[in-house]
Image (cartoon, rainbow, N blue to C red; front, side):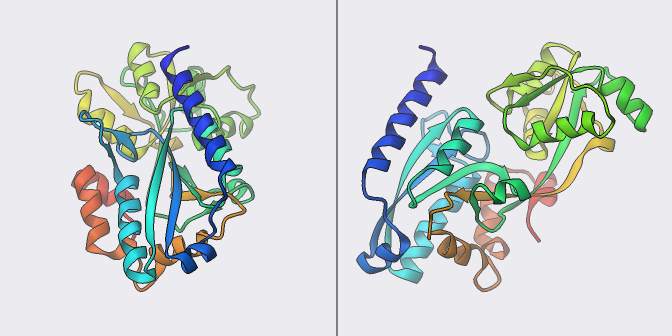
Length: 284
């Protein structure tokens, strides 16, 4: 059994365990003043990941820790977080759909109409742009002809079930083209790494992942093709449809001027990102 399969098996066992335990509603937590929230997270730096010391860190982790402090202060509830890692996005997303009501998912999940029918979303915590990337040797697509001839003739790489796969689908269906056979990978970093391996590959990544790759791979010329970028996206935390925790999570994000207007929120972004990328993803 390889490492990723082992992690998935352990995660599944934990899901089954917490499902067997009586799921705690927010209504019950308000009465008992104690609760445990099952936090399932898709491993993806800088959102939620283990650092070199083995500590769980990231933008989404820091936001959840701020939520723990807030719910103690505002509701008097002692909240414990039980973290569960997932290395495959599709498994992570599927588990949230059937998880106990006291569960939340952190996975840089783009809010879409389709997903709103499958899970409950928190208020958004980040803006996003999905950028289309290739090796730097590929001619820049500046018009429709260039997009078809230079990009869509390449091999698409993506994470199964992700919004980026949906974007790739539309590149072909919107042009009445037969879809190329996708190469599926497990981690976001695998997409630019495949492109580094061969210029025949291309794919979508979120703008933060693109920035991070540029920062740590100065030896590889990789480019975005702005003509096919997807703007106007927002990330939210996800919860099962059965939950009643969504109201208090959204109160945390939206009460007053909202958490994303606070210095604390900006400090979290400064901790994990640099100024040029914060300007693109910070909520107004």
